[in-house]
Length: 405
Image (cartoon, rainbow, N blue to C red):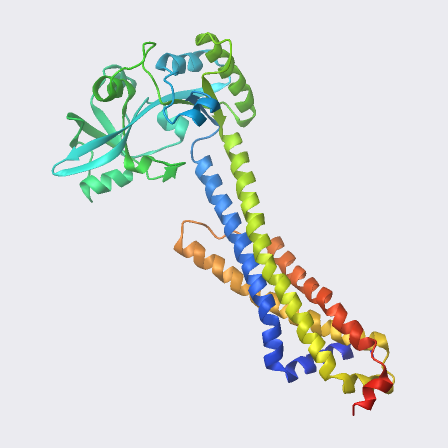
């Protein structure tokens, strides 16, 4: 008997027992759908986080007060960075293109009869370049606004909608901590960056922030929440981090540990990639258990099928069918069940990913290689778990099988 005849006979046998065949492949369907969906959601999550990190700005370096030990001990970071540090980095580090400083504080913003708690960010005019933001309406504040401590503000798109609805906020005034500010611009919507939602924030000149809102609390100058610098190119990021470290150690007269931490976009992407990759692998491994269970279901049903078809096997062997013919037929049945179940499960899994993408900020992300690999694995599972029943059928003694007729 050739391979084509074995295929035809296996197909007829499966169609003759439609309900059993459908229930047998159900485990493979669920397993494949679960694996495809988990891998797709994991990759979509990784892509989403990577985009959030990339939106922080090109080739950025974050210089944060305190070191990792102080971060573990206390949530309140020491005030070790000042505005003069940012100026020194901009003027003395050759691998740096631009630098901006940020001083953050939560404050109540009042407009008309509306009061809302908002993140106020004191920063510099270079914020737009370093953080890769665009102004949607009006303008950003200038060096003159910063030096004169002008009471001007640029607000995020979400905050503009909350306070002013569909009206143009440019030219309007609101109050921050009993100080009146004129809105001169609205930022283009960009979403949150690692917990800081700039769309729902108000940006003011850093000197105005220090003089009018939070006051000066450091004896060494205008204290900062952090400094953000952008390297000239991706190849300069590591060199920039090294040069900034040396400069700040000299300025702070450090002998022991650093009193600051430098975090690069590259480091963040690497850490996030490791975490999301591990989570995706874990999710896929958990979902693969259902594939394993589906394979056991195939083996159990086929063992029952061998018992029920003892007479058929005996007759076929009596008229000349070899062990290889019987083995091949049962193996083909197992592979057909698992392959069809794999294809159906893949369709369900891909549909699930598309549904998640439609209902959440995650984008549909699944490589064709992953889909092909999952279908091949499901077929391999059918082949693997079909070996025992197929060998059992092939080894039946035709004399013993025919006695049951």
